[in-house]
Length: 109
Image (cartoon, rainbow, N blue to C red):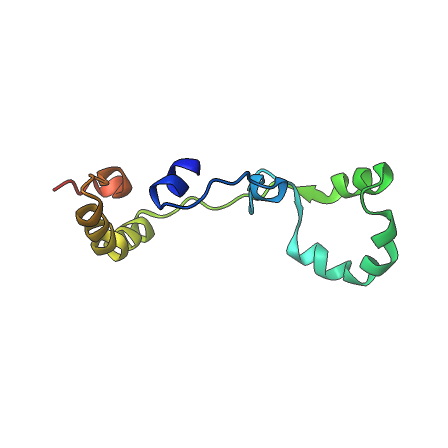
């Protein structure tokens, strides 16, 4: 990030602890949306217990890693088609090849 800030002529700054974590991590265990909705009435009751070892142990019994379906080739091709003009424009502006962004269709000019 410091290289980007330097390139843009912005002053350097240290990243806060909040900036360092992933916003959405598929490996982070989460409660399923259906279960979360059915247990929503409990949220105000257990709020004081959050972060305690007992709460985290019980939460660990009902959480799972998110399992995303594999992206279909059709969707991948549609996304490649959609973003291709933007990638080409960025290549022209930056003077760098971004062929690795084209994905499985390997659209190298």
